[in-house]
Length: 227
Length: 232
Image (cartoon, rainbow over the protein chains, first blue to last red):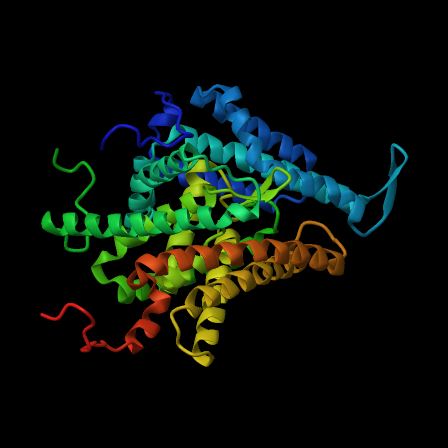
């Protein structure tokens, strides 16, 4: 496959975690997070232990912690929700720094923050140590329906192409003096969305014809089988 | 705004996971009817389109902006089965490759933001299409109404799930009012953008809009015989 299709989160490396089979990493992540989600909120020590395990895995992966930390911003909207919880939740009220807070709300806020943080960090570690192609092969090994994996691999393959097309449309709009400030500019952006759909759809048709002309019968050839 | 791990308890996450798996399984069969052996490349490209469209920001004013969720618009453009597959694939890729949304919440994300928006958006669209006159100009309007309805209904589903398996005992009436209120506003944006985008596509390639096919099928070929000016 050509250059430039590595996804934005992947961090190139040769650690044991990078070399581990993708399907084992996927199962590991799922199992780990199911255990974390099933842990009652007040088992504070357990969450500490999970964090230590996870930090050990991160250390093993040799991905710089700052690389992962910067990408944890996706969590922010739910951090806000968690911070609001103690003020709005029911239950016994406790005084903290002169504020009346709900005890179950505080506990739930801790649970959400702890679990979501562990989840984001663990998912980031998977994404940073696994190439998209390996991830797709791992899903295939886990008996995810082949058609679904094919759809996913086409999406991953053309993601940069389609977003690149969108960027070029934006450059074209802005080089003609367009700037989007309020809803009055929506018709223009919406027409770009429409054009992007037409281009994506027609590209899909061309890809399908190209596949047919190479003997596609509904199943993909084995990955890297005969090279 | 993808649901992270731990937002819902384990039984709720597993239950929505089962719903998502069943929906994807049924859609895999349904999409073969919509697209036959073109399913893999077409649904893949539609998924890439939905992903890209979610990155396209629509300014609301005062420096804030929103973006399309895309479930309803995808359903009108390519049919509900393909739309379920495309949106589900988008969530799986966002979870596994972009760490956006928790892996245990993947079923919840697919059910609430993919399945529910597609079902409601397409249901409203087809329901209105059945009772209203079949006019091409109406297709974008109905698509917009469907997209508008899909957002608050999806937020209601979120509240219902929260009532069953949420992390903290929050007063549900307040949560319902806040969520549905905010998402009705978001829905207006979703509806308007969907209307404008579908209208733009219908102007150039009406044949690509699957929801317009019943309308296009009713058109008959019109041969105009009277000639004006140049006669040959």
